[in-house]
Length: 296
Image (tube, rainbow, N blue to C red):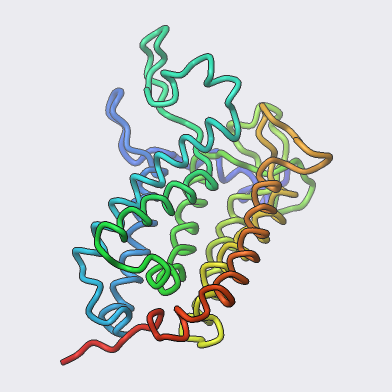
């Protein structure tokens, strides 16, 4: 094992306490707080654009934004959990259905928590919840998502840092000097810190791209497709460095399930972009998709 800064860096995960507070069986983890931070980042970004850039005219209030985030959070959590169950470990949960929702082992009564969340399931759950929410409020889902999708990658920065602090979703074995040892790794070998790769690419880079296009007339109606294509592309690349799920391994040649889902995400983004600019061209040309300055 290397010494100096390299040694400190490589063993950093073992010195990070994943819990903020731990009193007996009561524990508050950094991972959960990162979810809160992710939603706060999106909320503050969205509120800034509404108040200072007049985004959405008078349609969006703090109450609407807060209600949307609540609906979205429920959709994300339920979708992410069910996505993990059906995409990643269906054969196990079909025989242990109570463990899908219970944070305890039904056989022993021991607290185990609920582990296993799928990004793609969370995306579908969030979209479904948003569609229902905006229909109930008589607002345009297309207009909102085109304007506010820019802030979504900010949340991924915190989410992936939460994965890193938890020592989960680490990368494949490597010999690069910035590799790390993760305490939960049974092989205890140097691995790519793929969570940090994802925080940078899915979070910082994707946000910068969407931010640069936030006021672009050309990108109007395309920001959500660009998000789908961008996330799917960078996640597809990172999956080459990320350790596949142990219960699945590689599911198609040397590709992981995450890569297959991301490939479908890119194709879906391309198809949606074409649909937005052809079939729905009149919607965007009519100005319904544009932010109107606030009166007064």
